[in-house]
Length: 312
Ligand code: MLT
Image (cartoon, rainbow, N blue to C red; front, side):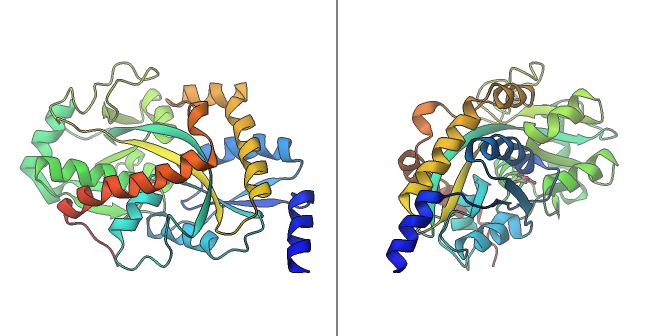
């Protein structure tokens, strides 16, 4: 009987609204990507995809909630690169990012920008490096907790230059941005999906982008590599997940709706304004995404181990 109702459930899916968990605060970069995608997916699926923000513990609280949810397609997760780094950063992660989820598809890979409060003294990325080396823990660095992208970017930066700043953690970089704009915190490395508006509006200073190449929508910003940080490269890839054991028909329906969203001209245009673009079509399948997560966990493990950063 259970098998039959599961099959029937998959055939009529979705017959009620879907909750999309974003594991960071509202108003931040993950939330921005999720709401754009969810709006388009709602139209395709004929049911509302409602974004719910479950911040805390660098994205691991929200992800943990989805890992424990019923595998019926009504609770889905939109998470980023932190899904892979958490596997090595947390000593006691209560779920396995690779095996407790079904991958639905990759969404986008977002460049990051090193920004500061407008009153911060350094003028260029080269100045920032010298200033942080000279002032170390007197400089405050905002992030969204251990496992967030802003944490990863800052960790790589600090270990590359060999100087530790004082970290100020938030539930997401949405609220962190308020404090950068307000001048309460000095520095933050955050995704262009959150920083573009503030940079263009002159509310924050911007020094560099974290991708290998410059970002089209912010052409004046040099890369970290151009600024002397050899090999420095981070892009924040995002993906959609459902709990392990969700029927394949449901995963495929969600993947098809995600693909439609990523081809939606409105989504593509908004992504471009925000410095990013949808994942290439050949990278959007559940199978590609599944292998990608496993490869990313393996890629970041030695980097995190050599930086010696852990959380409980
Ligand atoms: C957010 O949505 O707040 C961010 O993705 C946080 C981060 O990972 O830096």
